[in-house]
Image (cartoon, rainbow, N blue to C red):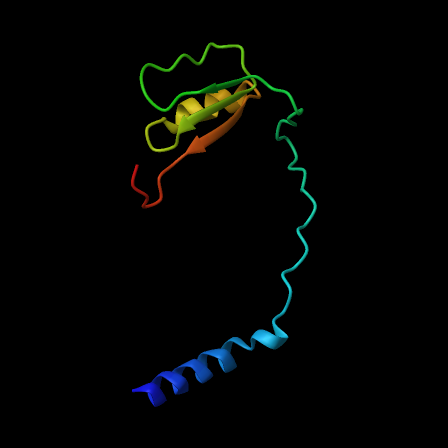
Length: 94
């Protein structure tokens, strides 16, 4: 059993090649997307994941639930040049 373990360990270490691992690539500079609103360091936010939404608020960023917010509402906010961030669960437990 110990021999099998050592064989598996040696195989993993060889496959991983830890001594000659490639360093991660440098983080690229941000890319400006044409037509996207530019955010300044200090902006006003509305974070709301449930309940009656009030899209008339004078804020620069809405943080909404991706699955519960209609795409038409997000498009309307974009039409007003409002940045929209969306929360979604990807298999996590709340």
